[in-house]
Image (cartoon, rainbow, N blue to C red; front, side, top):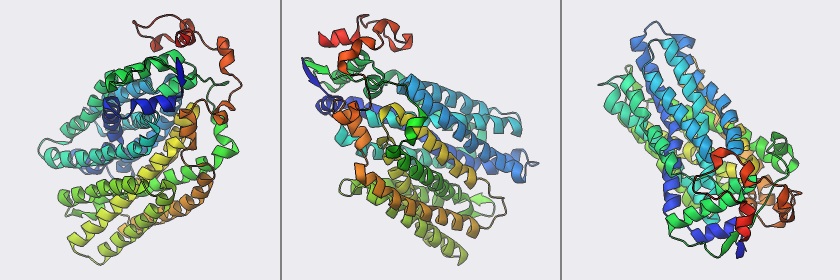
Amino acid sequence: MEEKTLAEIFDFLGFGRFQKCLLLIAGLGFMADAIEVGVITFLLQKVTEEWPEVKGWELNALSTSVFSTKLLGSWIWGSLSDHLGRRRTFLIANVFLLTTGCLSAAAPSYFWLVLARALVGLAIGGIIVPFDNLAESVPERFSGSLCFAIEYFWTLGTLYSNGLAALVIESCGWRIYLLLSALPIFLACIGYFFLEESPMWLLDRGYDYEAWQVLQRIGHINRKDLSGMALVSYAREADPSCKELLVPSLRRSLVSLGIIWWLGLFGYYGASLGSGLIFETSGSFDYGEIIFASLGEILGVTMGMCMSWQIPVTVLQPWYYLVSTLACIAVLVAHALKGSALLLGVFAFILRAASMGAISITWVLTPTAFPTHVRSTAHSILYAAGSLGPVCATLWPKNTQLAVIMGSYGAANLVCAIVSQWQRKGLAERGAFDSLISDLHASNLERRARSSITRDSRASRPTWASRPSWMSRPSWSERSGSQLLRE
């Protein structure tokens, strides 16, 4: 048997049918957050038609409740993902999201609608799980590009929500609109049966045999034969702890990314929710202009992915946020001078492209900056910080001037540009992708130094019989995973 690291095995497996399926399943779950932004944008107007007594801050509660509970949900799902696994947490989060989404369509009063949408926000925090699973389940050379590629599903979610509103909300009502908005999540739930657990997470938790079984199934799907190979094992000394994120090597990334997530998402959600103010005429929406502006997100992600092949993402990030700042100013000036709809639409298009590109780069940097055993925990903390952004973006009173709103979004993007430049120096010292690469190359000395358990002390690790029942499958042998690997 020739022992190989996880990185070497993934390189052998290549990018095949399994990775394409994983991208589709993860992408469907990733659409949820973008769809929710569209839902809030259109729902705020329609609920006042059914419940005209709802006004002022009470109306703001509909959007604020969703984004506030996202903050709590982020802490829950990330921690569960690091302890229970990516696959199982993905199912729980999506089933919860599907159920609460459908319940909100049947809300008998405004109070129950707000409560149901708050539960939807609680479930949305689970979208970080498929993103981390994707980053951990592909060959190293494809990880950056695929983390960019999943952002297209975010844009698809935006276009799906906006297009669905144009087709359905006026003719069939907002309740049917909410039901149809949950369709991608339903498909994501079905995708669970085709999803595999992250081999990197299994290996990190000490489940060598299960990780090997997953890799063999991936090999079968990709039509690659792993016979004659064995997986280099690795074990940690302690369970994941948030305290580890405060060590000097990770603290700078945590603080800088936390600021960028908060203010970056404040700017992005502001640009998305602001479409209703920018393109609203006589109390109705210009759906064509809104959809056109949303298409800018595709350009932003595509340009970011293509440029990342030649330019480090740490270099691109501050420039994207700077362009977002300038685009906010351009939209503000064009609106104040009552420029043509075409000119305003072009500036809004550029704003959405720059904002989406900037956020995509932030998403790509996040999972690769932290080690496997605390990756989802760190990601959830940062996603929780990001959830403060949309909460702040929904607190504007209805009569707030567009100049104040767009000015604040521009200032937030400018701060992100400055912090991104400061963060770049810290990441450059150790490489933006070192944590992910280190975990893939499980046999290197730097990663093994984090554990006092070596391969010679396998006897102290959990045996197959003591492992959780949910990890098992009927056809698997009950022999020790390490014993089978040696065979």
